[in-house]
Image 1 (tube, one colour):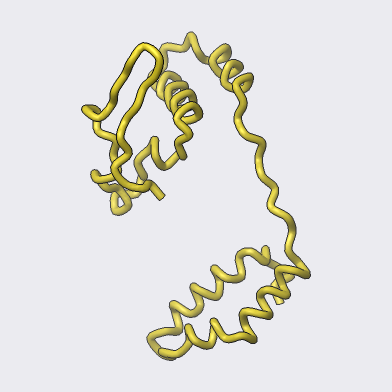
Image 2 (image 1 turned 45 degrees about the vertical axis):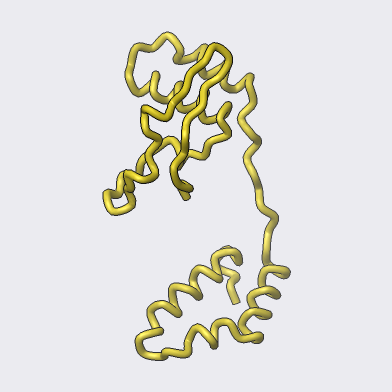
Length: 134
């Protein structure tokens, strides 16, 4: 069935196909969610699926190495990267919580961390994340 694509992508492909066919066939979603289709996709995952390969987490030694490599740089991008790297790891932040999208339509001022919400003390820092960034 899906030997030429990653089995995890089959549901996304089906969703896209259903989205395109829905104006012409209103019950296409019900057909895609039928037991035959869902069991076929599940069987495909069992037969052709591969385990998820995760990257190892960033450890403190990795951050020290980056700081040693570019810590003396005066370039704004390097300083911004270092601040995002150290803050993001220690604050358990996702990339989407530290950046804004290049796509203007996806930007939302409601998702920005406002400067006045940042609290810095001798031992720690904190700030308010207004909305989920995903």
